[in-house]
Image (cartoon, rainbow, N blue to C red; front, side, top):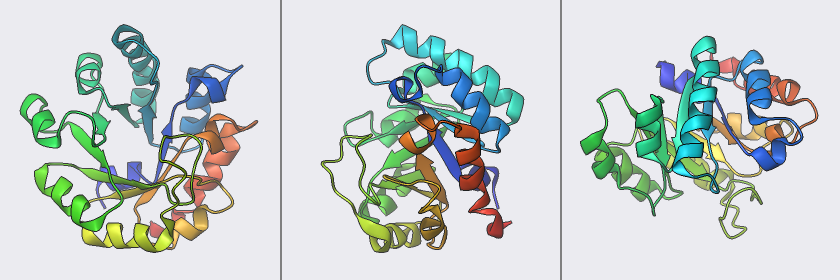
Length: 212
């Protein structure tokens, strides 16, 4: 099993509004101490300068814990901050375009929920697929769609690389995802808004312990 597969068992996406009154740094510190090994910096309202500052603060934490830091949408900010990678969607820089400007070991993730599109993304140079919304979500703009576990499993089975499930996943239903072929889960509100984010993160991590 690769380092990326292990790291993507639980990927925590940041959200300053959900974390408040705590800082994102405080919540990320707690989840890293609980065993999470990948963080995605996501802040749709931040300027490039603000995002870079946030990335540098989080990078100090992820490096200390041997975890990965990915930046949502912004390949340029990820490169400037020295992050491990970026996560792209259909409206962002293309995977091929990103590969032209990033070093070979830079991680590129891509969001899709279709097996054919997932295979094409991996062929273009994506390292992993983010697939959802599995159970539906209010944390991202996906139109309230819930793709379900069957389609998640189909996407995961269509590609050789990691597939990360996202959308409405928490410590109560994570075991249902862990029973599919998905590599791991990506979570936002279930951790960022939790009174004890470390405890929730620990339960999410534990759901994939059977794969060791």
